[in-house]
Image (cartoon, rainbow, N blue to C red; front, side, top):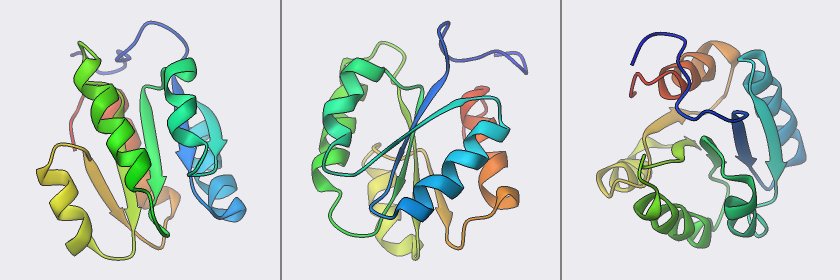
Length: 132
């Protein structure tokens, strides 16, 4: 896919999921720097937002139980012809998240602390078709 080509033809929405309001704000700011529309959400409400939002990318800040969301993402991706949304997991440890990557739920893992320099390139690669 050529550089600059989006994965979907509509507005590029990114669902930003975190228990922490501060994390949602910080990550949403980084997403918007990429020219994408950030939609912040709490983990408990995120699975219900998937169908109505149809996001191109979901960024999940792992701070507790996100099993329901990850199961919903897996099912949503299986039903998507383009295998969307792409999923970035933000985590303190890569050990737990490597298992999720192997299960084809997560496309990339970014280790905390999150900065624009660590997250922005991963967003760019996934949105513009360069798998991380």
